[in-house]
Image (cartoon, rainbow, N blue to C red; front, side, top):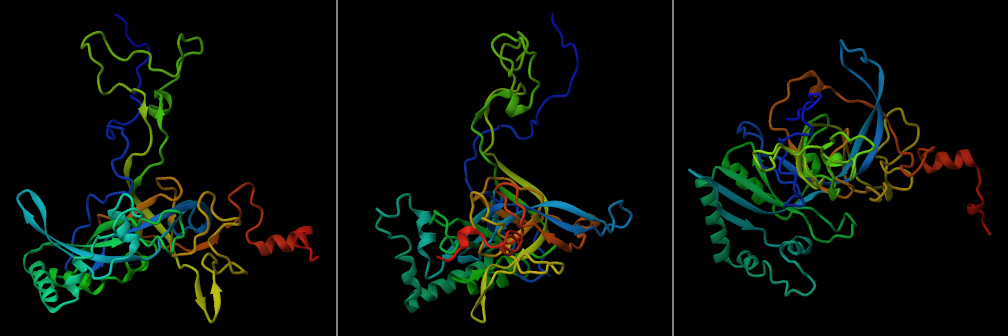
Length: 398
């Protein structure tokens, strides 16, 4: 009978089994915050696209801590959040088996990017989606039916969710198909929620209407995929000694003779990454506005702090690697977040009320780094570079 020479805790968590590829590409909010009728009606989720990371300098306001009133450097993630468009409303009733959708009402005009989501091949399709349902809005009989359905929702439903989609046109990415999701409405009575949804049909909902500066939020998404990996990479098990026969990135013993099966707890090779995950308590360090025209000029000053002398935008020199430029609204989150660049992330309001000092700390940024993320960035803006380098050969006028 052999036994192990040294006892050791197991490698990897069993809480995340099975480690298989996610069924969905977009993060799904499986729970929404508890409804509070005393608050005004508001959305509980938003969608954004991960652009990349940078770092900031800020002064800590944490009495009693060693770093109180000292400057610290922290990594931040930039998530681009263009306004979303509300195109429908769904009412749910409670049954003994959980929620059941009672009625779904769609807006009159639904954008092409949203309709693309209902097709596998848009260019060869007949594009008939929603051509019949939108005729209801045209005649009086249809309008009466819509009013009747809205009233039914107000009477019977307990949960109201709006159907929203992202705007791919203004993102200027390769993908044209919008991401759609149902977002629960919280606050106010059911009638208020239905009216809120009805009034927001075909209108844009900015990220500022959902989240605020210094708020704690949750990120739901699918992690970066790494394909089929061995046990050393996938479970972080110890490598075997150098002279091991037939390879050393293995598990030495995968179980006893009896039971003559492999237990599920034994680390095995397989899929690593592209898992659906929820990450809680990410603090919003800044709600940034996108580029906007003001007095005939394009205003890009969305990353300057009161300590900055010149205007600067959030985009590092040369843009974000593998992403490009962030031109729409964005949010700055503390730390890293799941997924590769361009991945769609679901941002959700926190499920509980925060009372910790750490969560309620007011954030005052002193500096946001915009040096190039592609190599050793030395300059914050092209103006800095020009001032340091002087006139260059490539800028010479012929």
